[in-house]
Image 1 (cartoon, rainbow, N blue to C red):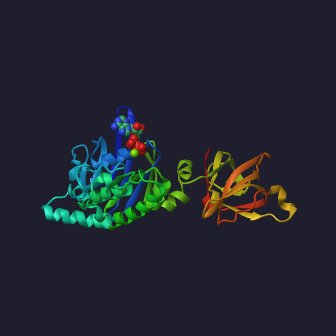
Image 2 (image 1 turned 120 degrees about the vertical axis):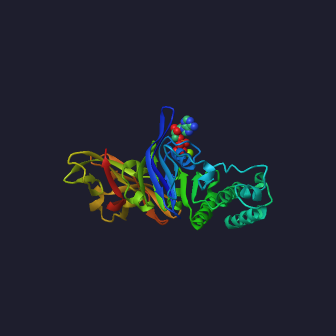
Image 3 (image 1 turned 180 degrees about the vertical axis):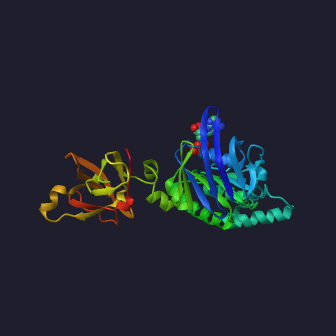
Length: 347
Ligand code: ADP
Ligand code: MG
């Protein structure tokens, strides 16, 4: 439905987007994620036609919207836009804001606008002006306005970042259902990995203008292509190592790797990959880890551990354990490693 092909974009000498390709299917929600300044908003603006295409091609529903010879204006591309600041018209009431971009007779436009306001749950504010609405209500009106013309493509740039944390969860949830119901191809920009995991059918990770990895949330979390992606999706323990006999040695056991023999590597281990069991007899105490601190975080607990390192110096690692009863501070534990959540990359 939305195809971005080999898009590059420069601001003067700065290359903000570098040969980026991405497809979003009908009814699919794809989150474009990456650190601030990596080029996400530029990609969205090029797709919308707000930024003139410099290189590559934008295709929507098989129709070329922009290439070397074509530049369809934003209002004719069939895209709905939602920005972080919502950009509602302050002098129009909610109903007129939503009806603004609709074609047809007044009564039909008002009927469609009312139906979409109903769908996003703010119909009761139809006659109100934007300034009297809360942030969450304004976000819903902006969403309704973008959806009202039944766009084939929805482009959303950090649409929840103006909301406080508790409201954000709620608005994300309702937005996801509304987007899914619309059947549009949705490209949503965010810098928040939790938001991407929550919203996305697929996630596209950008770094410095380039696409690093595209895949399902499970792909990115469990099969990251490099240390940048692995770190982006959650805290991680990093241990230095070297490949010997097709494995990297860690204090918790050997992690297999196809990297060249003798090469320096870093082993990245998610905190939930460390399984702890209490040490009973004193005989195993020499290789055991000591619990430095344990903090209940809600559904899980974070355990800070001092582990005997290869050179005798203790290593500090974090383990995440389910439930509210982590091992006691100063107790000794043995650690088993879940290889599924351990990754080896070149150092
Ligand atoms: P993101 O949305 O990922 O934070 P942007 O696409 O907004 O990134 O910006 C990418 C890079 O391009 C940044 O370095 C930013 O400063 C620069 N940039 C963005 N817009 C402009 C502009 N209009 N003129 C010059 N530089 C810009
Ligand atoms: Mg941005």
